[in-house]
Length: 273
Figure 1 (cartoon, rainbow, N blue to C red):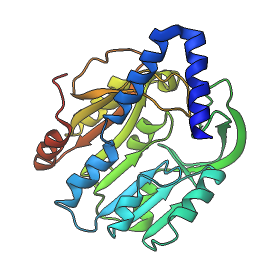
Figure 2: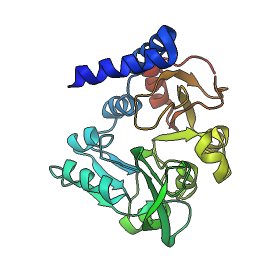
Figure 3: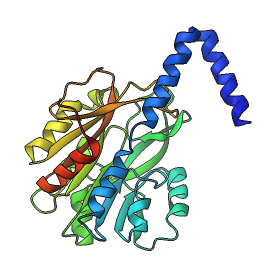
């Protein structure tokens, strides 16, 4: 069945774009496979220096980013406001009692009720912002800040903060209690197509981290062709870095620890920005 589906896809691409289009698609698949997962790199680096640390996963989806840390005995706080995604997440973290799942969204201000949008294109684009024509207001959620959450939990450390909120990553960072609890490593997503309408860009997000003493590695991906499908990776670059394509997207890997940054450089082998 899978083979037939792949053949049908190849035939469709051949008809629509010709042999060059097929070759371009194959190159994109190869490029995507050549990318070592950013989250995996961070896990490997932190495991060499932090034993059973604390992770906060904002926009946990089905939990695949947090699972390596949960298996290693870390304390994990996961936020997932989408009920369908959260159901899968809760199933995946059942074996790990140190994983705590929160149903709230996270931003830079506390809101009792806010519209939450989902799309049939992908389970990974649920957001507080309707950035796709296919987005529909599906739920009402409450919003907290990391400052309020950290104070309520009495946390005094945070080793890894992963953010994937489909546009609200800067707002999540603004809601941190800076000067009180500062993550050793931060992984967050950028894509101007989502965030310019929210008032910020890729450089705004990266500069925010730089201003707070972080060094940043950019994992740049080619522009998204369609959500829910395999995307093509371009490479790792040191920040400041001018994106090869203004429609590109990706992740920022940031740390305020010099030794960890050196280890991340060895793993990522970034090109100069």
